[in-house]
Length: 438
Ligand code: UGA
Image (cartoon, protein in one colour):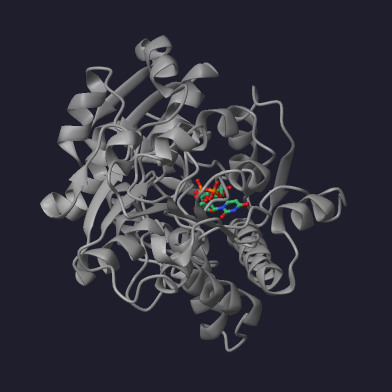
């Protein structure tokens, strides 16, 4: 089939490359000409495992263009994969989606299946359908389908090719048949529902996971007070298949471009219908507090971070991505800087994106050892393998080894052998330094 993908972010580009891998001819459209130029030359614009290889392998089946109108007319289905960022009030900003819809209405003169992959509030597909019916050109027939995506950054290619399910929200038989043809070579369960249910499945899934994380984080915080260990507690819970072992990793809070935005959007939507989802509200509040937890822990030792040298290990919102959107590290680093600390940061691949935000306010280190040398305190925000594999000898480069680990990177049995202060999440504090050392 000839497919057009609008938006070449994580969702769009990965979807495009995976569709090409399955034998479709794909045209990628993006308004960002610089991005399109890079992609035309085979240069990936996002960091994703397996993406460069698949882009190269399927180069002949993927076109890249900033001329959307031309691409729309030549395809069977147009997939809308543009961003839906958060507005000030927490609702989703749909302006990029509507820009595409308006272009489609003005351009298409034949049958066109419009597939909405962007995460949009429940009811948006119906509004798009209505708009297209009212504004279409002579000869045009639009079929709008909701097809939310469930890929995670860092494993996006794998998640797309081996999806847990493909959700298709369509009212019309022609649209359903077209979607069956698109996904014919994907051997995964397909769930056909109405567009409103498809839109809701996306929010309800993401928000359930966010809720699970906030729940385990609250349990972790309580574990610290009652002498339980969250790693053991999560392990013990996870064996129960009704609970599951995934997304029970306590930490310094969830980040990224999805959970923070989608929890706020669903909460906004529920409040709009006068049916506030109290569980989601709680998940959001717990996460906001959790992001400040390492700072609170460190304040037990130092009232202020003034003149301290701070090593920050890991800044991206999770390992496997260079994405810093809503990363917990971005809450703490400005607090260190406001207090007057010197901040040395190491992240295996987040450096370029961090430079766009913090510019020359911090020092960027190519190795964790460089960041740790002569540091007074160390904060860990991302569980990169490069950070988890560090040894005591690396931390011994610090003036004194005081670590605030927001991702529980190290085994307490190992840590307690060394002269360190080690605070993690939901686990016992190891304090093997005498008070005079701190
Ligand atoms: C998330 C969902 O997992 C995808 O299914 C969904 O398609 C995607 O959002 C989206 O809406 O586009 P993603 O944002 O890439 O994917 O990241 P996750 O792996 O879900 O992690 C989100 C955050 O939760 C990270 O900050 C991570 O560190 C944190 N997390 C995750 C925990 O704190 N504990 C856990 O046990 C798991």
